[in-house]
Image (tube, rainbow, N blue to C red; front, side, top):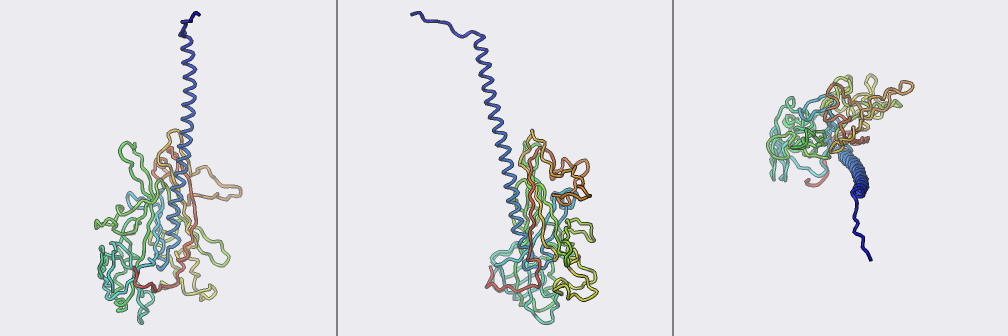
Length: 420
């Protein structure tokens, strides 16, 4: 037998190499395509999860807003809040602060002054900035506007019966979702107006303020900033004697926009009104300014509880439900925009502003899913919170919550034993 010693020619090697390269290229392209699709779907799932997490957290707090507190301080809304400067600025997300009474905390007051409360049993812990509500026990000679007082803790209390109060003048108190409670919770001067406060009851009011802030992603991020939904309780959480943005905690990553609107009660068969938090009224709907929106010819802080049903309202008085007042809030409509953590260089970026909407047949303005958000000017497309382009995947989520506790008729003394 004769064995052949013939090998591969150069041409055969080149052809084989070319075929192998094409096969490997095809496999690589398929793998890369699959990996890209997986990453895209993973980003979509992540932003949907972040949006649901943020909405769930907001919903839980909004539905309890107003329990045991006056309607004028149940919900405070801030239009276009720039967390970096702490001021309103066009195009920025809205912010909201909600308040409700703690179900488990109660103490009996044994002495009250404008700078300190003394209670019957020690308090395990109260942080500076914690809101307290002091309730008189129906003493005679106390006006309906003075039978309770909202006050703020002045410094941290640990296992003590003396609670120092913040003595800031109400006119000097801040009006911000990332600071200590504002002027509506600095009524410490009331504590010296009647002796009933020396035998009153004190309960705790919880505050949850939500806003959106962007943070640098560290070295190598090429200037990329990630937005977060933040929650601030108005307290000195880190005990550094300051109440500021350092006391906030992140709730959900990638929340690029938070927009709010109110659906208000109407009279008889009128269509409920929908207003954004920057509706052009006087005064504007910003933070604590809600409390001034009372019809001019209805007097007293308890105007909203005087006449029910509406046909019993005396002639010459406006129906309070016609006013832009928080007591008339039927629902709070929340719109969230969640975006991917990192931009995709091969994606132009989702655009949720829909600039070419236009009007429909008959002049009907189409549904504006981002409420009153308006972003214009040369910096619109580079804004940290503009839901347009820049390579990000985005999802929009909307929900209307009904804070039924806002329709509080009067303050009430807690019946829980001892308290927490």
